[in-house]
Image 1: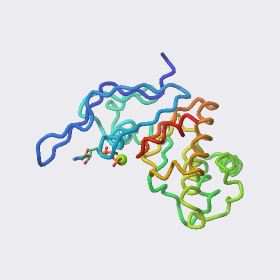
Image 2: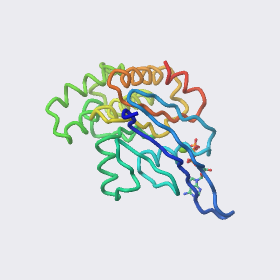
Image 3: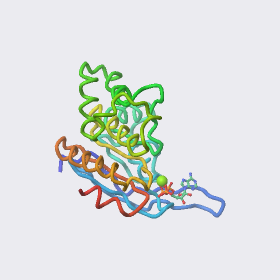
Image 4: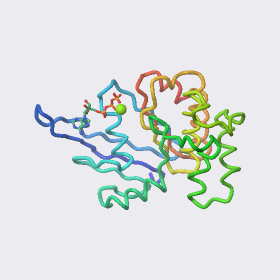
Length: 212
Ligand SMILES: Nc1ncnc2c1ncn2[C@@H]1O[C@H](COP(=O)(O)OP(=O)(O)OP(=O)(O)O)[C@@H](O)[C@H]1O
Ligand SMILES: [Mg+2]
């Protein structure tokens, strides 16, 4: 295909447990091309976070392969996987991981400044406006609602123009109105910028939002 950004081939994850070997993932394959959105849906304990960890190269599969931006992750050492993650993947963490000492604008600017981008402030402002937070630029994370914090985290994930974006299990409350708006925005954003957007909800309500 050539356009594939992220491919999983026959991924299996088996871990030891007190009851013997536990198979969390069994020969799972998927392919994400430019501009694709994917909602990973499943009940609690079904293996969503395990899969996202493998796709991001945070963990290695028991068998199978993940190919991210043309690189087979199993052929890379930990430092090389960290580098490809930094260059290619935008993360939205479950607890958002915003820095309390920085305001919303500065949180989104941070990865851009680390990347040496001269347009950091301008781009961060634009992204925050895209997620409806143009009036909250100088608020610290503590002065933002949960949904607003999530939208800042989404804007930050897209800031450095990653090849793909992996929200690491946002809370079920993501289906509430403000977060729905941001998901729509990011979904539109991936269409415009041709970056895949892979969403792992804890409820089955997300596909509707992700497709919006
Ligand atoms: N290192 C491990 N050792 C043993 N069991 C594990 C390990 N990692 C995950 N599991 C088990 O594998 C299953 C899948 O875990 P995972 O965290 O991927 O689920 P999930 O779909 O993300 O669930 P949730 O929606 O609750 O976040 C769970 O039952 C978990 O207890
Ligand atoms: Mg999980």
